[in-house]
Length: 542
Image (cartoon, rainbow, N blue to C red; front, side):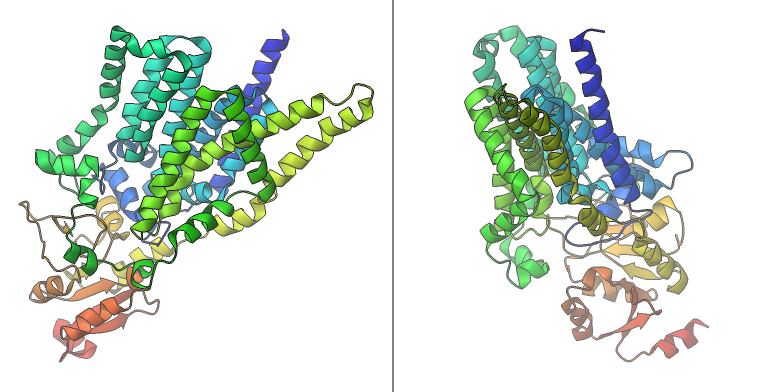
């Protein structure tokens, strides 16, 4: 077997081991069942589990590609759909590590360096936090890594099909997350720096536009599924205008000042968000060990000096994602950290490049000191892996959701403690999973009238009434919904989402309701008229 072929097989083996190691960590810490509204990491996980299982339509931008791909995991034989959705995130993350290894190998030309950089990214806390729950961010970084890999292969092989593949992946990634739009200017800049005449080839440009548009086809899922009456449709894109608001994310920007003030329920917003730059710096400084950060900075410098096209590609992605996060910080968005994940992936590549530079430097040690060269060849890899893996125990303990059954407890509390044909007010909770996936307690009426970070034209309700207006009321406190629901039966409120905002209960109390705990776990409360007691209600029911 030739030396080149041996090296290729070694690279495949090491890259596969890095991905497998990452997947095992994620699988051991994976959430075992249905999730719940949990700020700031899991705002949407419970909704995504239900939506993926029933092929629903998510919050802006709809996430059609995620819904279709993750739906396959919810149909795995012998696997609970909620667990399947969580498992999908772990698989996407492990695949992203594998692709990142391939990118790092092309940039550093060293297997050890590629392994260290990709593993440093794999065990970083923010990625790990998203790899163990149903969320969209691991698939996002996978698409970004695949597009970067396609561009680098094109640069090395000079085969246009890889350039067209990168264009297709850029379009496909946009159907999943809008921040992937950064791939377009970054990719064009890379081609301009690597072989600018390609941008003047009319036929190739037309083909590129064609495959890019082909990548956008999953967007058709949204109006088609809405017209079919998707069981869980958060955004209802039944008109062209609402479809555009959904896929462009513009519904995040059109809220009036009054709506924004009324819906500022985040503790970070209502109690003062703090200095955005301080939060930003704290997040960045806590993701990698200091030694790895220094090596990453060294790798950045090496990349700029040795490979300007790749430096332009990765630099634009890195700066673009960080700028996007700063924009979110200025708006007081709590879950800003998850948007940095692609930038962390880029920094992982820089760590690989820095490690590769240090390896080459040690190989140039004087030939008359063979003992030092042999020692460095052994000690350096051991130290490097030790630094990367030193954080694993702490991150494992921090992000381990293997025993997290809060979502299941929530469902069982509602099943056990709510009266027949009652109304339950809740916000982005596992109750959608209860009625739509498990088909339990379908006698209940579920309503979510509460604030979201985007302009929501309709409340989300079960059963979903006919007509575009749905159940809705213009009151995001839930009081008006409670008044209307009180005419037909008992009303409950699922309280977990209000733990950090107890003022929400005062809205009902000021409106003339009592808020009475139900059960012993503090998950559910009953909303009663002021002059009615729990005993009165029970006597009336009997």
